Image 1 (tube, rainbow, N blue to C red):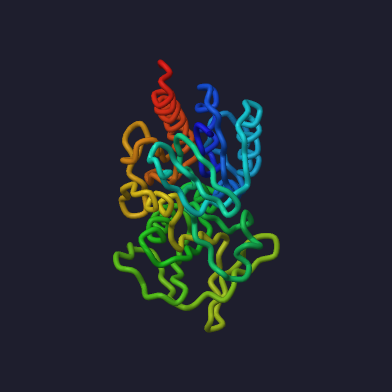
Image 2: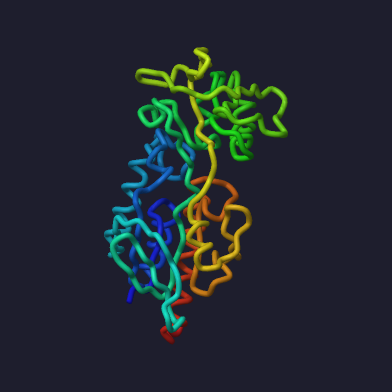
Length: 293
């Protein structure tokens, strides 16, 4: 039986794997990619890099370090988590297998919902972003568009307002949300495409008009680890998993870390919470095995 299954291979999941593995546990990481980190074009607010680093490179380095310690990584889609029939350990079900484990760490992040709009996927990392706090700096005094119509979209727009020359909230056919801040333009026209060759240049609307934009921030909603937490009865606050200071949920042996717990959606926060979750999972498993600390 595996000691710890970590669901998600982003900064929180990999950080957790390092600490759990160094504590002598068997650790498997299940994921279908590193999520939002892979889409980050340049990161220059993370400790230890004198020059900006791409999200893909940072992810690759983290995973390589964990593999060196003996962490097992599997590409898998997790569809269910629960307890076994004896209620003594967990079962993680993927599309291809069931894995028994003594503890679980949820670290799949808060999935940024993309939209089926031509140009979005093609221009990711070339003006299409999924994190205003991460990338607002690169759009100083430039026009930007936020795609989305909920609270998350308004939050992203508010981050961008003091930085960009203009910010337009495109709701893609939905009504304008309540509480639109001063200075934020709102467009409710359906979005037909994001235009650009090497970089984003404009957002094309259904009425044939265009909005000039150097950047497009996708903020159409959040989902992620919360879906799995619901399956096992872990309490949520909105779409975020409730944890204590040790990253423990209300379900013994189930931990969560990173964007899944809400708060600051930043790599530094994810790495810290992952470390704490790994340490806490190790303590839990050692207690279950009757091993002294």
